[in-house]
Amino acid sequence: MSPVRAVVLDIGSVLEVVDDSVFPAPFMARHGLAPDAFEVRVRALPGDGMTGGISESEVRSHWQTELDLSDVQTDELMTDFWRWYVGTLDQPLYDWFAGLRDRGLTVGILSNSAPGAREAERLYGFEDITDDIVYSHEVGLAKPDPAIYELTARRLGVQPEEIAFLDDHAPHVEASRAAGWHGVLHEDTAASIAQLEALIEG
Image (cartoon, rainbow, N blue to C red):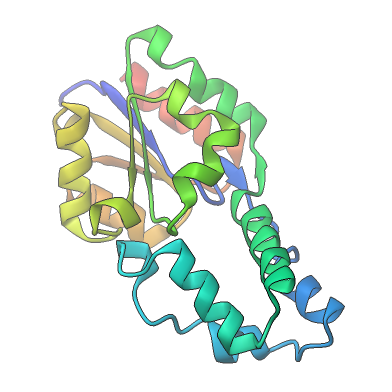
């Protein structure tokens, strides 16, 4: 078995703790909109944002039109969305992850993302602690497509069997294993770090 030379993490609900109460319910309540209006009228975008089929400005325009919002209200909705999207940092996991390059490991992120994610998530400095970040909306591929795992390995310059991967979504972990990676399902920060350490130490 090849030693683990690279560690790749997901972002949402892994490096970032996401609180679903932040969006969209508070906005809908503040403006007297039906609680289910966002799900019913807005979720179906005219393009797949996850694989780059729609831009952030097009998402904004679609939401504004479907909910009949003013420019000010739409600004407020987008602010709420990005505050929900970036969540809060899982500091213990981030600190552990940030120290891996000093240990000689290649470090990457693989995220199913929304247009605008790279810019929004710069507040956490992910680009400063990784060798590469693969955002699905930028590459036109999304987990669990086998091609995105192949692309990520190639961009990191390592073999699939040399990658340890952490994701909170079981189908994405299973797909990573099918691609030859060492996939770990994230459920608890301390447990995830321990499992990844065991893979690194061999």
